[in-house]
Structure formats: C-alpha cells, structure tokens
Image (cartoon, rainbow over the protein chains, first blue to last red):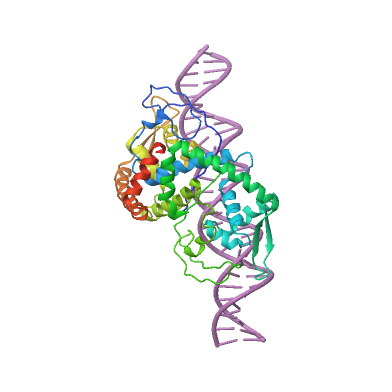
Length: 178
Length: 178
DNA sequence: GAAGATTGTTGTTGACGACAACAATTGTTG
DNA sequence: CAACAATTGTTGTCGTCAACAACAATCTTC
C-alpha cells in the first residue's frame, strides 16, 4: 500500500531502440523523461490521467530543485523543514511533522542531519519537557536566506518550463494542498 | 541525491497540540495532510513553491488512486505499465521502461508481479533474442478494462477535489510531461 | 571474427513512508 | 493524590522505489 516517486539529478544518456518497430534513430536527452522518439509509443494511452502527469512533473521539478540547490546540498524535504522552523521558531517536532505531513520518526533523522550541520537546534521545552523547541541557528538563518535565493531561481526554472502564467495558475489550483 | 514521496491509504487519527502556543483544540481529520488547526503554522512560509504544492497534491492523488483501485490491487505504476503495453503490444522492456521513466531493473520486478498474476506475458522476441516482447494476456485485457473504469472513477474524484475546469487546465499545463 | 554495445537480470545502497514498541513525561479520572 | 491513559521523541523493522554496478546472453560494427 505504498507508492513512491524518486528523483535524481543525474543525466541519462542511453540510446536504445525498440526491437519490434525498428527503424528510427535519435540522440539521447538529458533526463529520464521520454524524449521525442519515445513519445510516439502509446501517445494518448496515458493522456487524461492527472496522476501520471503530476508524477512526471514532480520528477522534473524535484530534479531541478535538487540540481539548483545541489551546491548547498539541500533537498526539498530539508528545505521545507527549515522553512517551517524559520517561520515558526519554537515549534515541536510533532507540530512540524504534522504541518509537513512527515512521520515524526522520519523527522528525527532529518533533524539529526540538520543539527549535525549546525543549521537547526533542538531545545528542551520548559513547559513540556517531553518535547523539543526547534530553532534555526544563526548559521541556519543565514544559510536559509541563501537557500531561498536558490529556491527562487528554481521557481524561475519552473516558470520557464511551463510558462509564467501557467505556474501561477498551477499554484492557485493547488493552493488547497499547500 | 534522491527524493521520495510515499503514499499510503491508511487514515491518520492523531490529534496533538503544539506545546508552545497552547490553547486550541480540534478534531482529527482523515488524512496526513495538515488540518485547519495546523494551517496557521507558517501559513505562507511554503506558499509560492510549486514543488511543495505538487508534492502534496501528488500524495493526495496517489492515495485516492490506490484506494479507488484497492479492490483490484493495482497501483499507479502497475496501471501505467499495463496501459502502455496494452496500447503497444510487443514492446520490449527497455522501451516500456524508457517510455515511463522507470529503471529497467525496476520494471523487471513489476513485470514479475504482473506475469505471476497472469496479466502480462513475456515472449522472447524472434528478431532480437535478448529482448522480450510484452503482451497483455486475455485475462490482462479484460482486467485492464476494469482498471480503466476504476481509474476513470478516480479521475472524477480529482475533478471533485480541485474542480472540473481546474483539472482540465492542469492536464493542459502538464501535457508536456505526459 | 573480435570488440563494443544492448537487453534482461540480480544485487546493493540510500531515501522514504508506515508501523510498532519504548522511556520519559504529561493529562485525566476515579 | 494515585493509577491509568495519552503524547513526544526515539529506535528499529519492513516494504517501496530510484540509482548503480556487474553480469550473461545476444546483437552490431568494424
């Protein structure tokens, strides 16, 4: 009962041909998305399926995010965690996990990593000694500012890819999920 | 360099509160998406990020797909594989993998599963004995027809969720990724 | 025909979601 | 106030998935 979508920023460069309808040749492209030579395979077979389009789009968008923020080694989930903490200092792990739809068990590892890099700090809450109050470190705050600039650059890539108006329309349509 | 999105169809029913701003109470909801009580946490912190919205939307859409096709135990990737094979009989595994952006190593297991259920058959190609020509079995064809009906029902859920026009606009915007 | 490429396969690694169990701590209730 | 239930952070397990690497069998090419 689980479905995953994984993304990498490495480029594929294979160039194979279907054995059955043999004939065409084409150059490799820079991603895992089917190139023009494959699009004539079942062109409309998956059209009209929102989930498939969204899946492929997400693969692309995560690829670009990871590539654009590659220099600072920050991935989408890490960025979202730091963003939420930065906007709401003192939040508990439980609160962050619920806000982002992350398992709290998963958040533990994410915070371990961010704390090791001195970007986030866990402070025992005085009012509820079970929980940790999460804060960005000074280093984390300046780092997040840089991440935001890179993320904005990534958003520009998205706008270039699907169009500025389409991106805004998309954000509007999906605003209920943010 | 990897990012994942996982989805489950189980319902969450936790109901915790942030320790810092203590006061509110609210009822649990039926999903992992943040409920209204959490939305006031960093409301606009992640707004404007297409990737996050798309991620959350995809989680929802996969949840619904898995739930809607739960009776036939077919998940999105399996459905896409059968759809492509059904529309293009005789395709090689390599061709299907490239078309769907799946690793051929991953497709091996997917086909193992589908072949075990007698939905897909691998036939050694006569022209290229390295490759397998993929076909739907008779059972697979009738099954796929049912899957399609359920998938259509799922698409109706999407339309209910974001609006009929918004769904069509979305499909149009993301048509380049299909 | 030998060297290189392709196809399907197996196995490994890492990220991720879902669960379960646990200690520490709170809250709740009799 | 004292048992009991619930919450929080943590650890560990399981299953899914993407990315790789290596391999045998099989083309392709020179």
